Amino acid sequence: MVHLIAIVGRPNVGKSTLFNRLVGSRKAIVHDKPGVTRDRHYAGTTMHGKKVILVDTGGFEPETTDSLKAKMKAQVELAVEEADLVLFVLDARDGLTPEDRNVTNMLRRSAKPVLYLANKVDSGKQRHDVLEFYELGVDRVIPISAEHNIGISGLEDAISKSLEVMRPAGRANGYNRPAAGEPRDNNDGSSEQESRKSPKNIAVAVVGFPNVGKSTLINHLLGEERLVAHDRPGTTIDPVDTELSWRGTDFLFIDTAGIKKRTKTIGLTEKVSAIKALKAIERADIAVLLVDVTRGTADQEARIARHAIDRGCGLVLALNKVDKLKKGVSLKKSEQAMLDKLRFASFAPVVSISGLTGKGMNKLLDNIKAVAKERLYRVTTAELNRFFAKVVEWHDPPLFRGRPVKIYYISQIGVGPPRFALVCNKPNGVSEQYKRYIVNSLRSAYGFKGSPIRIVARGRGKR
Image (cartoon, rainbow, N blue to C red; front, side, top):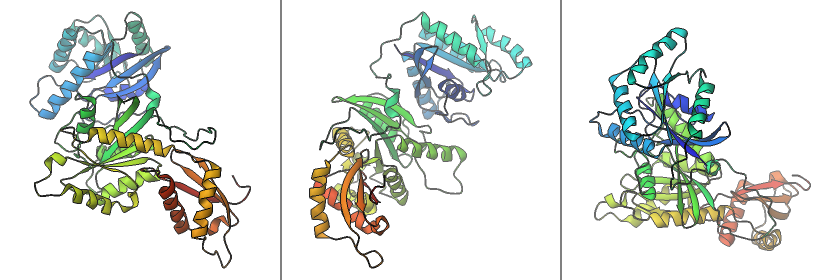
């Protein structure tokens, strides 16, 4: 059984630092600027032999008129509602505040079990200051320092004891698959058989410029507002993992921060967010590049697409916000303009969608599944060499330093993405232009729609 634990508190009390400490990795961005975490951020770990899912939430501000902060507040309330246990983080340096009292009242109304934590207790004096928090009328306040790993072992003991007396609340989402988003080695060494098998688990990174509708898209697929969606650019900062089951396939959608064009004025948080977004591509099977149809395709989107291809990701191009397309503007011309800008990615399927209205959602998921299948396609060596004999017959490799290049055979050495080795007498003589010719021939014969293809040249006996 897997228990869900929500971490809540005011902005900048150290929730993300505690989340990272308990998970054992820097999955959440930590910064001294309040409000850096905005979405619910999930990660699995084990405590005393018990599997748990930790949820990092945005700073809770009970009384707010700011529309973005109001949505963050709603996210916290949803996290508490689905949690089995709540960790309420208080700031020992700031002391007890009216906001802390308001959050305490909200947690009492929820009737959920709560552990009260006084964070940033780095000295004996601050440990004495923890006594102030007993004014909240609680039985126990646990002093910790998430940053310096003080009191964390005792906290884990307290969490474990709290979980022993409860059953996990029933939830529809399949949170027991944390491995779905991890990097995977798809060179499975399976028997050599020409096949297109549909993968059961697909990790999908949704990437693009700020404010192109990434969170809105995922919220529509989920049927709930799991991610904060707002018309203020840069609402998503951390990559957020979200699971979805559809027609027998489990998807792990990774909502990422918008990747801005590099400028001298970009802030530290934006830089770290962009790095995390690019790293999200590295652990994904498929990258969905979202483009705002009302703005068109820019050079930065071309850079993102190249990054995804270089990392071996399958690629789906999605034109979003078609519901906002002005009258008289041709959708077909908009799609063609995107392909003209991304000629190097012409093998990727193009889908026109609206994350707001849901237009094209089934088609998008169908294309993601299709590209994931093509990315794992394996061709038998016998079939491959029958095909390749014709390829060489149509176009011999060019001479290398005045001498002929002989390619003895080709074999597929991996999938995810498909990788092929040319065994020849002069590996250095196989030009990049000739490799592109082979890639185009492979696509013409076998498809590999949406997937990059790797070609390496080797000498005989080389591995």
